[in-house]
Length: 472
Ligand code: ARG
Ligand code: ZN
Image (cartoon, rainbow, N blue to C red):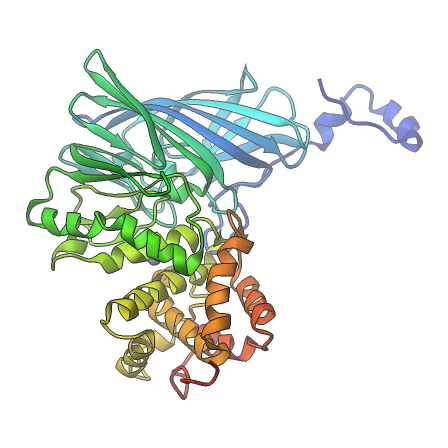
């Protein structure tokens, strides 16, 4: 039982209200969105999740996903009601053990009304039972769950969690995860982190995954299907697990030739970015008709077509770079996407430089020369591209140009100190583009807002490419 303390001066007034508990009047619903202007209904207000425990069962034949999510959270305001982002059908919700009322509001919002208000600072344990076919869930006309001949996959940005578990779907609210998924024998369930155990009974195999560092909802992944799995340990003892759909056709060899180099790439990235921030390494390739990849935490998703031209270690470099830039240090809002993509692309340029396939400067010059002044490339602002252009090539390539310009302005010593210092300074947190600019100014001791203005915020092709050799 929780009651508000009443200031002595308010005692007389409160006597009048004795019939209504003071709490009920003051407790308000949590906001239905996290307040991100790009995606107003993404995430929710009023609580902060610390842990998701998902206990699920998936039948590939019917696409039926059923199970229970148990969410540990803390109320961040006096809460009369709160939302979860979720698209599947819910049969029961309990809050701190007691049945709670729930209602759907729109395609994506589940409104939960507990029996009694939840005081600010109190713990919430929320149990949600659900079942449904994720491929049939449409949010804004879109289905993030990709069904495959032998299973299905959740791996999309900026949103994919609402198709398979209820949550606070915004990168500002990160949490740890236990994902336990039961699938028919002979089928595997792949998720983030460490495979704690797997066991089989009554024709079903259960896979228990643990991701023990803060993880954004869009970086949680689930893939069910028939996979070939390779396992290993790094020299530091981190478990490595890669999974390849048995149905990759001609791309199978190139996919392995790329992803089996994960340990090598991560070792090299540690030299550039500092210690790897998570408890496991790997990658997986399901049999979806995709060429994109996604930096799902500890275990990136790779579309098979990324390997259509042979090995593609560069894409592995990109997704692993995101483990530092994107996953450990995450966007504060989706407008800050450059703090992910600019650095992931730049790390590919550094890899190219190391491999003797063109220096970062040469690649910057190439990008500058090959995008004409009237191209949309110079109309998109990487520092605030808008939701429709969040993954525009300009965010990546012009975003990397910004980093080459920075490198030339402040010299290699300060530049690489920043690349390594930032993931440490901001580990497991969130950051804006402005936060990065401030940090770079602090470390380099140079004013940099004009430089970043040119490369991240102006429209139109800047007059000169990233200046060379200005610093060193
Ligand atoms: N962060 C991902 C990458 O650059 C982008 C994913 C874009 N999503 C998509 N469906 N294409 O690695
Ligand atoms: Zn990326």
